[in-house]
Amino acid sequence: MLNKPASRASQLGRYLLAAPFMLALALGHSAAHAQVAPTPAPAQKPIPQDVVYYLDGQKADKSVLDKTKLDPETISYMQVLKGEQQQQIFGTSSAGGTVVVTTKANANSPAVLALNKRIAAVAPMVGPTPEQSAAIAAVQAYMTKNYPAAKMEMVAPAKNQPGRYHTIFEQDGKRMQLFFDGQGNPVKE
Image 1 (cartoon, rainbow, N blue to C red):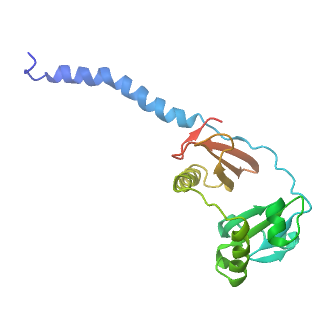
Image 2 (cartoon, one colour; image 1 turned 45 degrees about the horizontal axis):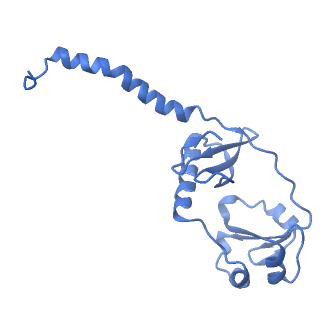
Image 3 (spheres, rainbow, N blue to C red; image 1 turned 90 degrees about the horizontal axis):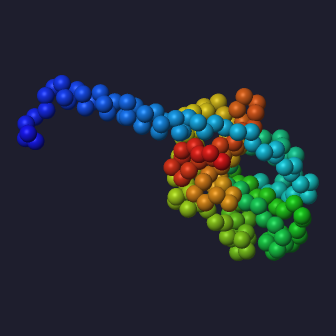
């Protein structure tokens, strides 16, 4: 009996019995991702008034940064220095700290390289791990596909949530947020 091939009717019956299970499984999987909707992002904290800015290796006034309206796509990296590190590198400190912004276009300019050398002696820049870079790229790909009109504000590892990533973006004039796992799938907060 085991060696006898199943009839077409019994094969069809097996498929029909399995179909609801497979459909439920498929819908359940995609529904899990569909259920995660963006939530309102927390209000932005005001920027302290006593922040010192460096843009492309040169000290800059905040108004210069406001006027240039830096596109996040043009920024190579940013670093915030405070307290002892700020004192050692710049000879002064302010409660708001020093924000160093380097654009992609000027990342290898003499001014940037000289400032980076001073900073590296005191506060070496620690970049993302390969896993973090892959997760952030997956989150960005998800956002581009599912929220093409969204303006990304940030994608970063979520605070106090290992293996999770947090993105804040603007969509239809609203500041929203989503959380993701390391593969770029949205998850509940």
